[in-house]
Image (cartoon, rainbow, N blue to C red; front, top):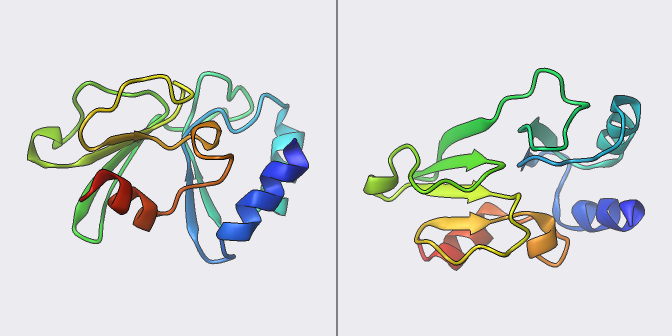
Amino acid sequence: MDNELIKRHNEVVSKNDIVVHIGDFTLAKEEIAKRYILELNGNHIFLKGSHDRWLSNGRYVWMKKIGGEYVVACHYAMRVWPKSHYGSVQLHGHSHGKLSFQKNQWDVGVDNNQFYPVSFDQIKETLDI
């Protein structure tokens, strides 16, 4: 399965793309995680999830304005998040697609998206922003 995930990632992510991993990148030890990272296209930002023991200094939340949209990413789904009352977007994982839909929020974990990473264009189209 690991090889298939790497293959699918590299099918849609180019070498220069920025990739935000929203936690639970791997249950493996740090040396295995680093090997996986070397095989993946893109420039990587890692957020800490509930199983990322290999990520000792990881942050939990990432925020950025992208193409006019304010995006908040965290491994966990939030009921409210920075600028949520002003139309910002919250991207999360952890729930494996089992949470009900909330406006401007999406579980972008690969297990909820045919085991592919999700582009920002897909996020805008899906959330209709």
